[in-house]
Image 1 (spheres, rainbow, N blue to C red):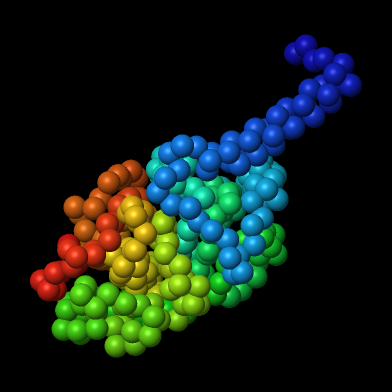
Image 2 (image 1 turned 90 degrees about the horizontal axis):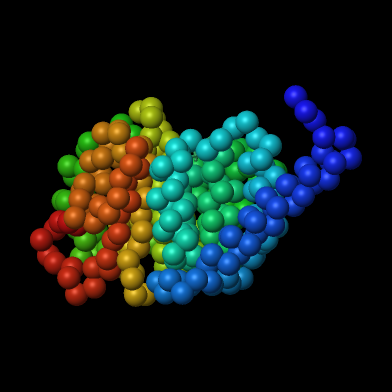
Length: 278
Ligand SMILES: C[S@@+](CC[C@H](N)C(=O)[O-])C[C@H]1O[C@@H](n2cnc3c(N)ncnc32)[C@H](O)[C@@H]1O
């Protein structure tokens, strides 16, 4: 092999690195300012710090050097990436912290991205490496083994009805996630990614509450436009059944691999007494 002299190679490696970092910053910083950015404008408030630039630099460094890649495939991530490209900066709520967290937050520069995580130890581990992420520990009231029963019985609990449609303080409806920080209820989320909590063993919380609560939040939207809801692991029975029940096949806009993308309109005046979310 014909290698160039060492100083030349060093200079070219340095230029390549600078090009990658600079390119990343330019793409992700200006992507949110395109004319297509009409749907939502996430605003930072006292609950969130805007750390977009440092986060993106950290993300580039992290993904350039890590051997552990996110679980979602390129095609699965691309659907969310394209949506975020057109609506960011937006209010982005993510169920679960993982190897993809830095990526999601970096895809939404200038907008608040909030992660809800069931495992407090995992929160500490992730934040140690990425302290700029907005992540909170949350508790769930369900277990995966209750899923069939919850799907059968929620219709006989009036507080779960689509016409009621509230989460905060809804103790009677077990599917409503009542243990979330106020900021989750106070904000209108433009995009919700459900890739947690765990739903692969009977005692795990399962995603029933996350799916129900995302549907309710989306239906309660007051801003213009739709809420984008992404659900991962739809190859599993529970995710599929709860998505069909609450997110509705008619709202399914895209699907690839194990992810479904729903665009949920505000229920507004269309909310009926039929007892059905779909
Ligand atoms: C199904 S995983 C989704 C992972 C994410 N999509 C990713 O690419 O990393 C969701 C949950 O698994 C748990 N989890 C993920 N990675 C973990 C790890 N390395 N150690 C401990 N828990 C982990 C967390 O509780 C998280 O909320």
